[in-house]
Image (cartoon, rainbow, N blue to C red):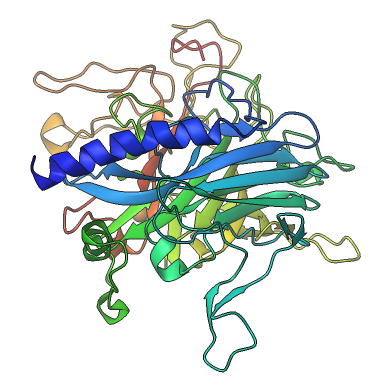
Length: 458
Ligand SMILES: [Cu+2]
């Protein structure tokens, strides 16, 4: 048995054992069937939702053809996934997260932005080795840990807190974070507003944070940005306990929702990405179109060590929240602002509303006209001669929204009903590569569909 076969076998054996042990715990979260696009929530039941997470080892696929060894938080009874589950709760819920640790070292979960977090029923505390007071003590964790797995018995810790403030939050390891967070121990926590002016289709308790929920998916999207130094991951894979010299730390991969482009625009739970369940394609209709009366919402998170200046092309967003707090003064004055590039700093979250306005009437049909109505667009577009054109894979061969033009010989298109594709990407251009493979990494599209009815029928 060679080394990699052994590793695969030991991972296969470790999982059923962990499932058997963790099934002794109760309160499995409810797993809704995820829509193909938008935020794929894992929701707990009732007003006291309970989530059982385990630490798992697994691999992800990268756009240059490499695979990468990762650590991650996964749902109990499910395999490894990257990033961790998107936990969705309501403002005011008492949230319980039980962490079962299958890794050979202590791990934990921090909930930045949450107050009065309890661990095993008492206030969560930093940990020191050796314990305080001791002259030689050093901090080993920012919060209470789950013990390392020992003799195949996992370590368990249970956190709880009241999710008082709506917004977008990171959850991540507080233990040796420069190693464990970089290895993939992180995820998203969404707290939905329940106060005046809020509701499940709002980001905060304010009317201007309402997003469209009609159609086959909510126009609520996740942009979780992260990075990988493959040498760090290989070092941990070879020996989890080995020290890695962080003077040599250098990311070579950058990801959006745990994927690189073009995998990033595949649907949630795409079968060919079995450990990377979250897509990043944003799909909207023109602002105010029938059945799509509100803007879309994007929740940005930065789990890396660098600034990620994210750049939805040609479109300002309205920043309504940062770090899980609505942008308003204590007196309630609105201090939201318009932003073009969204500069998400390490550990930050940004909540941004966005919409595409058909300002020049590029929608060829009146929204109430039947499909196939003649051109009534007032903007006359002169298309260059074919020799002077270059076609992208998603071009409809027409400049008008809702129209598919005739494609030239030897060209094909992935356009389905005359929709527009507008690129959205990390604007630190060194960060949109996969170890030098250009135009991969944290890139996605905003897809603008024609108003309904359209030939996509959605
Ligand atoms: Cu750009």
